[in-house]
Image 1 (cartoon, one colour):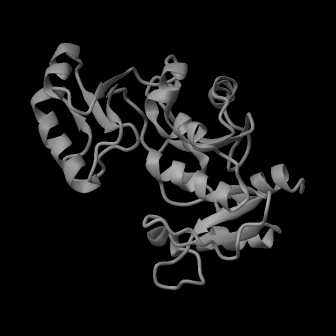
Image 2 (tube, rainbow, N blue to C red; image 1 turned 90 degrees about the vertical axis):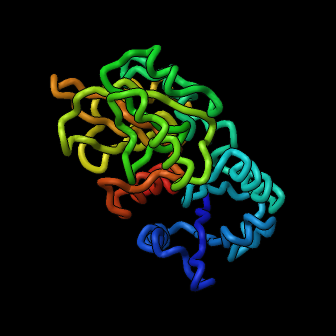
Image 3 (cartoon, rainbow, N blue to C red; image 1 turned 60 degrees about the vertical axis):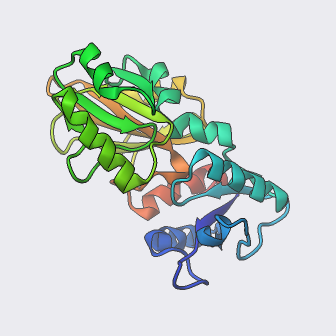
Length: 264
């Protein structure tokens, strides 16, 4: 298995600064790594350095891609004679919230999904929840007014800022019922081929249950504690584009090395 990372826009022979420590850790563990220009890729040019080995299994680690962009990446890897660890359908199974939420409905806050051209204020009034958390299929609004509102008439400002700061509404709208969570209790776990992994210790039972239900090969699971003590899943993401929240690069690489290189 070989890693594929975005290269630095300023230093063409180096990985993007955001991933430099992770690349170093993978090199130290014995992995081969290629880098490519995301900017060139988005214009139709895919020239990884060094070139991808023929028939190699390629794991991408980097920035989030839209469905069309990721499909293009899969095609580019295949044209180079290699094979992606995660195909497009599997990528979207974790990357787009509606694809996993229904399978974890008892483990995650209640969620309703709406098309991007709906009258979202009217839909919120029909729900009549005390509070609403608004996001698209991928991300919430972490700037400006934020994603959590208590009055339907406030949703227009949220949607306006989502379009302004993100450029698009990816997929549609996901409206999540607000639950009361304890501060500073959110933890990220990774699941690889059905096996949950924690940065230290073992993953809690809720992550093991998630791993039984979601069969994607490599994904992240974010768990938080509710004020009544119950653990809840608040996010699932494709493992290739998930930040190492709460993990060191070395902890992350150990998990993949044990799996792909059979190192202890």
